[in-house]
Image (cartoon, rainbow, N blue to C red; front, side, top):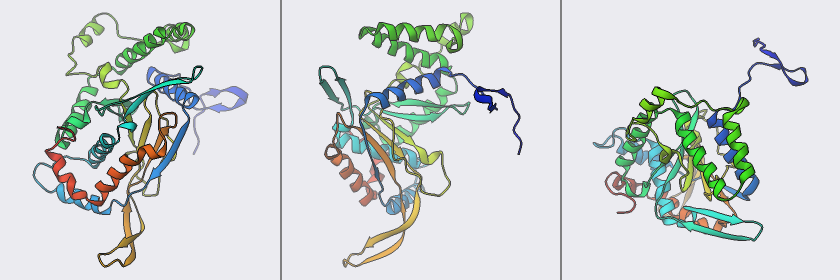
Length: 323
């Protein structure tokens, strides 16, 4: 299959596409670069046997009130349960390397940053606020409302609010050169950001926050959850082994797609057999400045309990994690 040649690039290579960074890609590039430059990552893969949980979810989907509840929402809600049990992972860190001083703030509010697909196919991370105060139905409706408002949102405008706020934080830290260069990058040359102007801007800003996404919907949460399984459905094993922890968060999760493979089943009489089982692996990464693996045990123990006793998820439809 031939590909149309656009022009000849560096070193005589035939370039078929060339696209400058938009605001969304600038923000992602900046945040992930800060992550790898400043955070000592440690990671693991948690691979629970989800056979019984998936069977229970399938049963519940046939009951009144469970219409439209997705497995993604169930897993996000399970993560909320785990983070509520393990505040050390639901935290932000501030660290000064020169003086070797730092502060870790743990939060009761579980605000999960979650990448979502934009109408144009790009990805944007949305902050799902106060997951611990919602039941599963409210959580599903919250996600649905975010998608509705996303369709009416000028993403460059919303992202600019976030980027501007971040720049002002850099100014407060007296990082003047970084601030000046960042502002110039949005105003001139290849990095120029084209914002709404005039009547178009006035009409857009007149939309209330209930009809569009605002800075609060896009700002950093207390942890990050990505569903890689919703992107790749090839049926083969794919569990991200390394993720970017986005500062000031201290943990990131990435759920894989379910995979069927042999598993050891222990029966009531203590005997064991090897049977086809369905596993639901997910990778997680931690900021080693804030967490050791031992600090994560309350989270993993809570997840173990959910997968071992999936009948408990029926109560999530009516009962929030925290009253």
